[in-house]
Image (tube, rainbow, N blue to C red; front, side, top):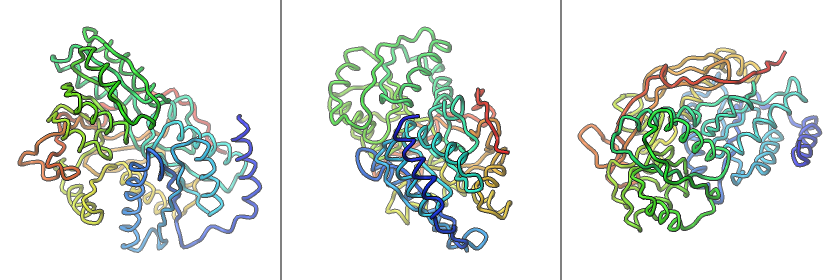
Length: 414
C-alpha cells in the first residue's frame, strides 16, 4: 500500500471517533467527481443529475420521511485527491459515496472503502459507481462494498463490435484512447474482439494520449487521415472527445466514429460542426428519443429545469431507484443492509426493460443501444445542445445478450 493511502486511512480511523452522529432526518450522499479542470464539464452535469433526483424525491416527502441531500466534492479527476475528498465526506457524516468519472479514481475509492470498512465494523460506507467502467472493478478488484450501474467497457465493446461486424464498409480501423486503465481496456478489448469477429479488418493505428491534457488534436487527426482509416474507435470522454471531433472537422476528416461517450459535454456540437451526420455511433444504456413514455416525460421535466440540458445518465436514475428501494425495503440507511438488499435486485430501468444487479460481482445489467447522431426524423423529438440533431436507435441489445462472465471472488462480511 502506498504511503498516501496509509496516511488517509490513519486519518480516517482517528477522525471517526470524533465524528458527529449521522443525522436521523437526512440521507446524505457524497458526490465525488471533477468540478474543476478538464473534467469539470462532465462532473458538473453529473452533479446536476443527482441533485435533480434528490429534489424529485424530496418534493414527494423524501425517503421514509428523510430528506435526501447530495453534497458535491471536487476530486479534480485525481485518485489521491479523491481519497482526501472521501475522508471529508466521512467526516461530514456521509455513508453513501457515488462517483463515476475516471476508472483510476474508481479503483482508488473502491480499495479505500474496502480497507476502511475492515477497520471500522459497524460504521461502514458504501460506494455506488455510476460511470467508471474498467472491467477490473468487477473482476479481480471486485469488492462487496462497490456496485456499478454503468456497463463495463468489455460489455460495451462486445455490443459495439457485434454491430460493427455487420457493417461491410468497415475495412480499416484506427484506435485512439486516453492513456489510463479505461482507455487501455478499450483498445485491448477492441483489438481482441475485432480479431475474433472480423479478422479481415485491418487495425491501421493504435494511439494512447494523456488524459484531459491535450488542447489540440490536430497531430493525432493527421495520423488518422494518413492511415487511410475508414472508422475510428475511441473511449474518449469530456473535452478529449469534443476537441478530437473539432480537430477532425478542421482537417475535413470523413470517417465513421464508434464511441462510448459522444453524447457528453460538447460532443453533439462537435459532431454537428464536423458535419458527419449519422456517422458517429455511441453505445449507451438509453437516450432521449427512445419511444418510452415515462423516460420521455422525465426528459421534458429535466430539460425544463436545467435549461435544456439533456439526461446523459439514465443509469444515475437507475442507481437512485435501487438505492431508494433498498432503503425502503430494509427501513434502514445502514450501508451493510443496503448492500445486502442491492445484491440480485431487479427493476424496470428508466428507458424501459428489465435490469438487475448481479450478486456475483455487483455489476448491473440492462438493455443497451447503439445510437447514431444526425438530423431528426418524426420519431426523434429531442435534439442535443441546440444543434437540431438528435440521437436515434441503430440497434438494441436486450439484457440477456449483454451478459459477460466475471472472475470476481468476492468476500462477504460476516
